[in-house]
Image (tube, rainbow, N blue to C red):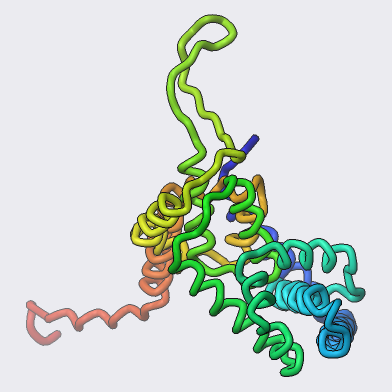
Length: 292
């Protein structure tokens, strides 16, 4: 199983996509694309409004309807971030994301204290997401319960899909994988002693220890640099691959991002130097006197 960071491919794919779109700009494709995207955004918003209306009208369906609204909103935001919203609603993806949202501690807490009815009456998915994020931050400050690592990871994956994940969620992924990874020496099939690495994502994680390890990751300059300089889409993709295993390697990714930044700075300096106009040469002094 490969846990390597998946970032450069995202950047390269985006660049290729951008080049392809530019090559078709002379045609009517751009206008068609914009109209299709506008129609798709309108379709997502229609569905979101329907779910908010259903949450107000049917109390028994309130939890699922609100989760559906958050899921559709997350899909729409992702499409807008990557540059294109799909033409038709992906009901299967909405259902899967919605089920994940309903299992998160923050969402369950909102539904348990009666906030769901208030948010349904408000009718704003933006207000719903804001309250969900605020409740998630509140719960992060409290000591989380002991849970299997895979449940922690899946909860974060649900937030990533709904576009409600915060930097602390990515730090928690790194912390969870650190706590569930074993490294040591062991025999190979041929009898030689080699370095081994094992991952036990079913291991129960003590809530206090997980919070402390997450705090250490959050305070790490490498992690802070990663969050500041990595593309959001790359963070999302890596969080969803192999339960976010790549986040255990955030120091290496931060080092590579620094190297890329240094290389870009050097290229910029070279370009600026090449573009700088040369000063005219000073007139040569005539040492031999006037011509006769």
